[in-house]
Image 1: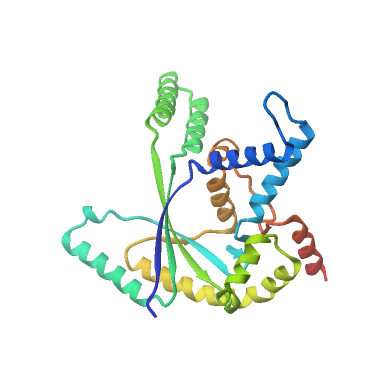
Image 2: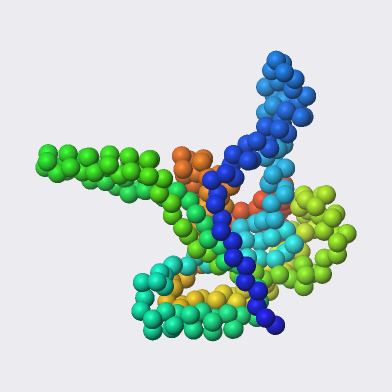
Amino acid sequence: MEPQTQSITFNSQNLEAQADQVAAAQAKEQTGQTAGTPPAKSTVKNAQKNAARSTQMHLQIAELRDNLAVLKNGGIRAVLKTSSVNVHLKSEDEQNAIIYSYQNFLNTLEFPIQIVVRSKKLDLDDYIDKLKGIAEKQTNPLLKDQTVDYVDYIQRLIEYADIMQKDFYVIVPFDPPRAKKVSFIQKFIEHMSPKDSLAQLRQRHQEFETLRKGMSQRMNIVKSGLENCGLKVDQLTTEELITLFYECYNPRTSRIQKFKKSDDLDVVRDPDLYTAKQIEEDQ
C-alpha cells in the first residue's frame, strides 16, 4: 500500500477574529436584536455561552490524554515536532544524502501521515522578562543602562518588524476499524448531532490501550525515518498539545493570557462526560 502524505501550511492569525464574528452573529440572531435596541445582558451572556459550547461540540477532538489526541470516532493522533534543515546551504553530496534518506522514509510508510507547517508571530516575552530581571540585578550603572536600552530595542523591533516563526509537525494517525467503515448516512447523522455521548466515551476507553500499542510502533517508524534525514523529532506531551490547540484557536488571547500548567493534564472536552469518566474510574 502506497503511503499518503498531506502537507498543510497553517496560519492562525485570523481564526479568533472569525470566531468572534460567528459568535456575534449567533448572539444577535438568538436575542432578536434590532437597530437601536440594546440586547438584554443576561440573554447575550447565555447566547455567547451557548455559542462557545456549540463550537466545542463541532471539534473532532474528544480528549487529550497520555500525550495523544483522542478523536470522537475513537481514532488517536500523535503530534511529532521536528526541527528544520536548510537544504540550499548544504553541499551537493549532503543534499543528495538528505533526499535519498527522505525517499527511503516515504518508502517505509504503510500508513498516511500529515505534515503541518504552522506560522505564528515570534514570541520573545520570556526572553524579555529574563533580560529585565538581569537589568534589575545589575550593579554596574553602565551595564544596566545598556541592558534596558537593548530590551527597548527588542520590543520595538518585534512591534514594527512583525517577525514570524515557523514550526513543523508530523501527525501520525491510528484509527479503529469502525472508524474506517462509516457510511454517508452515519456521517450525516454525526454532522447533525455532533454532541458526544457516554456510550462513545466508554467505547473509546475500551479501545484506547490497543490503539496506543499500534501507535507506538508507527511513531518509532516515523521517528527513525526522520532522524535518518538529520532532523530532531520530539513527541508533544499532553501539556504541549493543550498549549498548541489553545494558541491555534486563540491566537490573540494566547499572547496576553498564557497557558498555565495544570496538575491534571488529561482533558475531556465535555464536562458532563468528564463526570461520567470519573465515576467509571472510581468503580
